[in-house]
Amino acid sequence: VLSQIPVYARPAGTGLNFGPNTDSQRAVFARFSREAAERYRGRIQAWEVWNEPNLTGYWAPAPNASDYVRLLAATTAAIRSADPGAVVVTGGTGGKGRTTDVEARAWIQQVYDNGGRAHFDAVGLHAFTSPLNNNIGEIMLLAQYRAVLDRNGDYTKELWMTETGTTTRGTMSTSEQQSANWLVETL
Image (cartoon, rainbow, N blue to C red; front, side, top):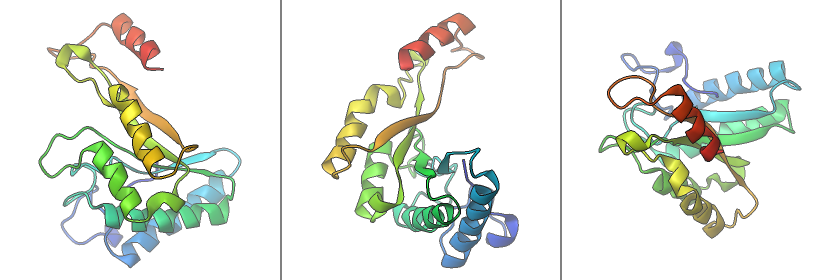
């Protein structure tokens, strides 16, 4: 997972979750991504560009598909210049929690609407599931995600679950065995 731009490339006072919104910020991120792809060519075959860019907690001050697609385009070009066979995965989407977050299916459509189709090989999603706390996660929505890709002509691109899990601590925790059982069901 390639995420976060360095402090020197971010505006003063912004955190690690700052979403790059200028060409110079995107260039810094793309340069780092190219160098990572060069260094790990032959050892890392797939690169996920950012983590949960549809959530304010990971793309501040608020998710912006247009800015994300510009970052994705620059980063994909950089990765492929270093490793033409590398697989590029969109940043895995997370479940909406804040009013400024973008629901994952809407986010994927916004990526397409902003010209993202040519800049990724697979769509990342986070399939967290814990029925005890009513968090069915994205795993229950796979057919709806597939429909978004298909509507945009990407019949052969895959959905990749790049994070999954259940709660193992706290009031809504599950046993390790139940978590293992749900993991098998998820796969």
